[in-house]
Amino acid sequence: MKIGIFGGSFNPPHKMHKNIAKYLIDNGYVDKVIFVPTGSKYKYKNNLLPDEVRFKMLELMLESQENMSVDNYELKSEVVYTCDTLKYFSEIYPDDTIYFICGTDNLTYVDKWKNGEYLLENHKFLVIRRDTDDIEEILIRFDKYKDNFVIADMPMEEISSTMIREGLANHDESVINYLDREVYEYIIKNNMYHKIEV
Image (cartoon, rainbow, N blue to C red; front, side):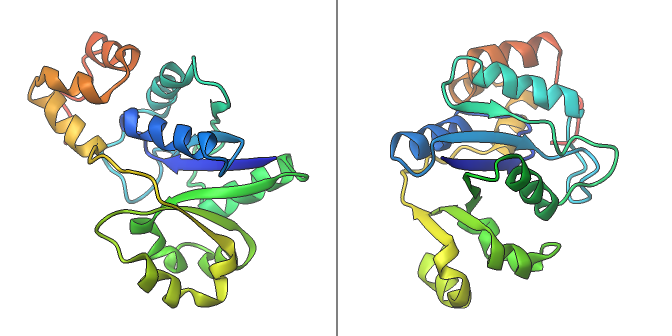
């Protein structure tokens, strides 16, 4: 079985996140996708909602989706790095092929991540092409690891969690178009994103 590990802050999780997973499954890139939200101890994010809240939103978004699930592995009291996460899932699923789902925007600096060179050499990356990034240039740069890259040319809609947070902070009801109704209602019910830095 081919399993895609989809990491991110999911602050909040939106329809494009789900659409990416659905596209990858429907087109045979992977058989299932596991969403792994980044813990709030991650030093590059200072505006995350609490771990349990983002986890709950992912549960709401995925509850009716086949072959998609959410895992709380990175929601710890200390920072968990991608290398730790991929090691964990490789041990949990030793007979399966693990892919780390990664946009080309992140792939450009993956060698700067903790144990980045080890990751590139020993793990497979399922790369989502972003229109603004030159994938050929990236592949040339990481030529010796190219056998570990699978490029998914899926149509991308310009939706970002930042855009949604800004809309929620401004009481823009149109953001419901980008969120599952259950997630939107959970956000509104709990008055989230109105009083935090977007």
